Image (cartoon, rainbow over all chains, first blue to last red):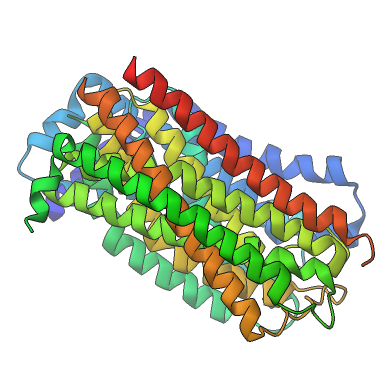
Length: 222
Length: 231
Length: 35
C-alpha cells in the first residue's frame, strides 16, 4: 500500500518534471496575480501591508486551483486511470498520493515564494515564518479538497471554470484561517490559534478526502 | 405501509401529485394566516418601526434555505447508499427551490439592512455564510447541468452535496469567527426585534407556509423529472 | 424610517415575484414534459 503510494508520487513528480513549464506557469500566475493588486488599488504602503496576507492567500488559492484540472485529466486520457481503478491498490491511497504529488508541485513552491511577494507588500519580515507556515499547512488542504472537485468534473464540459465554482466555497475556511493567522500575528496576538485550526483541517482532510476522491473517481469513470 | 413500494418513480408519480396538491393548498392557507398575524396582529417594533415586518419573509426564507440543503444532502446520501433513481431525482428537484430561498433571504436581508444598518450589504457573519450557501447550491446545479448522463449527474451532484453539507458547519463557524474579528466599529447590527409572541407566531406560520410551498413545488418538479427521464 | 415602504414592500414584492416566477417556469416545464 505504501509502495503504491510512493510509486504514484514518484511517477507524478517525474511527469511534472518533464513538463516543468506547466509547473512554472502556475507559479508565475501566483506572482503575477499578487502583483496585480497594487496596480489596481494603488501603492500606498500602509494599505498594501494591511491587505498583503489576504492577497497572497487569494493568489495562492487561485494558482493552486488552476493546476487542479490537470490532476486526473492526463491519466484519464491515456487509460492509466482505468488501470488504477481496476488495480489491487486501494483507490483511496492512490487518490491521496496524487493529491500529495499535486501539493508538492503546485502548493509547496507557493509557500517558498510567498516571502518574496510579502517583500513586495512591505510585510514585516517577522511575519514571514507565520505566512510560510500557514501556506505550508493550508495548501495541502487545498490540494485534497480540490482533488475531489477535479475527480467530480473529470471529462465534463466547462471543466476548469466549473471546477472553480465548485471548489472555491469549500476553500473559504482555509482562506479565512490562513490569512487570519498572519493578521493576528501582525496585530501582535500570535497566529497560533489559526495555525492549529489549519493543522486540524489538514488532518481531517487527509483522513476523509481520499475516500471522497475515490468515490468521485468511481462515479466519473463509469 | 410498505414505504419501499414508493421507491419506484412510476409508483411515486401519482403520490407526488396528490402531495403537491395538498401542500399547495396548505401553503396558501398558512401564508394567508401568517401574513394576517404578521401585519394585523403583531405590534409595531419599538426600535425599527414597521420595516421590521420583513422578518416574516426573511427569517423563514433563511430557515428554508438551510433546511432544504440538509434534506437535499440526505436524499443524496440515500441515493449513493442504495443506488435508487428516485433519491437522486429528489435531490435534483430540491436544489432550485433551495437556491431561490437563499437568494430571497439575501435580498430581503439586504433591503432590511439599508434602513436599519444604513447599508445594503455588510459582511455580517450570517449574510456571508448565506452567500456561500448560495454558491454551494449554484455549484450543485451547475455540476448537474454540465453532465449529460442523468445517473452520473445524480451521483456526482450527490457527492458534492454531501461534501458541501459536511463543510457547512466549518464554513459557518469560520465566517462567524472572521466576522467577530473584523467587525468594524461602524457596523453595529441593530438588535433583532425582541420577539414578541405574536411575531413568533407570524414567523412560524410563514415558515410552515414556505415549507409546504417547497414540498409542493418539489413534488411537481420531481414529476417533471420523472417524465423527462423515464419516457 | 418613514420611507420604510420601499424596503418593506420591495422585499415582499421581489419575494412573491420570484416565487410566482418559479411556479410559472415549473408549469412551463410540466407542459413540455407532458408533450
